[in-house]
Every structure is written in C-alpha cells, then in structure tokens.
Amino acid sequence: MASAALLGLTNFNSPLLRNIVPCAVASLAIQYAVGIPSTFMSDPPTERYYDLSGALTHMTVAALSLYIPRWRAAAVGTSLPPLNWRQLALSGAVALWAARLGTYLYRRICREGKDSRFDSMREKPSGMMVAWTAQAVWVLLCQLPIIAINSVPPAAASVLPKTVLGTDVIGLGLFAMGLAIESVADWQKSSWVAAREAKEHDEVFMSSGLFSVCRYPHYFGEITLWTGLATTVAGVLTRAPVLAALGGIRPLTAAAVAAVSPAFTTLLLTKVSGIPMSERKYDRKYGHREDYKVWKRNTPKLLPFKLF
Image (cartoon, rainbow, N blue to C red; front, side, top):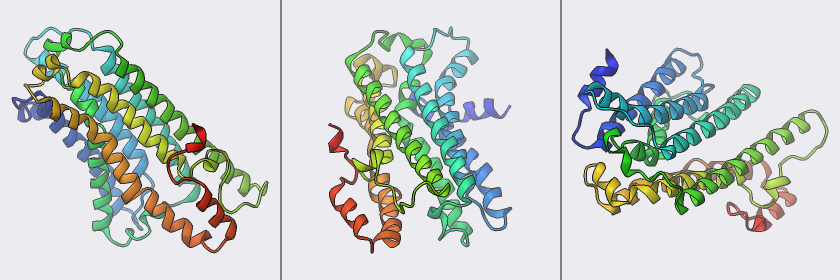
C-alpha cells in the first residue's frame, strides 16, 4: 500500500520528522492534484478551487498529524492509549476554522467569478503553479505547532498534561476570539455586498461594523487565532518530558516551532499577499474619494484599538 510505503520511507529517528515529512507530502499532493488540472486542463486556468483545496489540505494535514504516530505504533504492536484532549482540541480547532473559511471563500468566488489575486497569473501557468505550491507550504507552516504536539509518540503520551493549564485557557480563548472576529467580519462584508447588489444602499466601500474599528478585522482575527493555537502548543511543547519524547529537542527549538505559525501568518498578511494587495486594489478604486481618505486616515489598519 502507498500509505505503508510512505510511512516506511519516512521512518526517521526524529518523531517530529516522522510526522512533518508525510504531512508535507500530503499537502503538496493535494495541491497538485487540484492545481495541475485547474492550471493545464482548464481554458483559461481557474483559481475557483484554490481556497477550497486549501481548506481540504488543512483538514487532511490536521487529521494525518494526529493519526500517523498511532499508525506507526500499531504497525509494531505498541498499545494505543487515548489521545490527549489537547491534541484533539487543537486538531479540531484547525478543522473548524478551515471548514468555515474554505466554505466562505468558495461561495464568494462562485458569486464573483474570479479572485483578483490571480489576475496577473492566469496567462502564466508557471505563476499559477507557484501559487498552488505556496499554498501547500502555507498549510504546513501554519500547522507546524499542531503537527509538533501531535508528534508525541503514543508510548510517551503520558508526558502530555491531562489537566488544563493557564496557556490552554489563554490560547484557546485567543483562538475563539480570533475565529469570532474573522467570522463576523466575513459575514458583515458578505451581507454588505448582498445589500448593495439588492440596491439597499449605494455605498462604494465598507466602513461600518468591525470595519469601522480597523480596516482589516478579518486579518486581525486570522493572526489572533493562530497566535492562540501556538500559545496552547508552546505551553506544553517546552516542558522537559515532552522535549525528551520528541527526541531531545531544545526548549528554544520547541518555542521556535510553536512561533512559526503566527509569525508566518503575520508576515504573509501584513507584508505579502494580505493587506498590501488589498491596499493597492482599494487605493486604485477609491483613492480619489474624500470619504475613503478620511476612513483610511482615521481607522487603524490592523489593530482594533476601539474594541479595547
């Protein structure tokens, strides 16, 4: 079987690598399985399934990272204790977020017909494939903390605290807050667009609801929820027994693994494809309007100070 062969080829000494590498292979496989037909078998190339496939990849990687260590243990006859509640909660949180966001973005592209991020790529297949590859990398880096905590071998599962820690409360609380903010912002934006199409208002850009307290509340929510998941992971991953179960990695390395997700998400959304692309698009469309200039000048870009 292909799965058995993959587990055999990735049977590294490091529990982290034993989990990360198969997840990376799965992430790339799903993206190429959708990206290659979308790029080379569609005329013109289409990004219709880009975000939906990203959500599917997130959910697949979360599930794989949770169960690959158990499949390895079962293959050699190791007894399988119950999964730690924290592993289930974190993996489930990723699946919940991915299902909501993927569904929302797929409905949006079905309604609008295209994604402006791909306007310059559709005539360049290589550019489209870079985007599909980048999404596979994005999934892996975002989920690195979850993959890490799920990498604890079942035989050493007792090193994961069963009690609720302060970092669990803070981290899962941040996740819930971030998910709520992102969900409400997306709902408000889609409702605003629907009302405009129904001629219920003639506003040309949205500046109400959460968009009155910061210009990109959905990105703030995204950064917050990944920060929350990383906080929960860091509170456990840096403990000496867990470090030993993962092959004796250093506390600084464990902290860096947990920090990769929110750091990468923040970099991506504030410097690469999130806010910079949106700013350029909105400035081109509305930059001549005085009301847009006032909203942009008086409304924080990312941090919703008015909420606190």
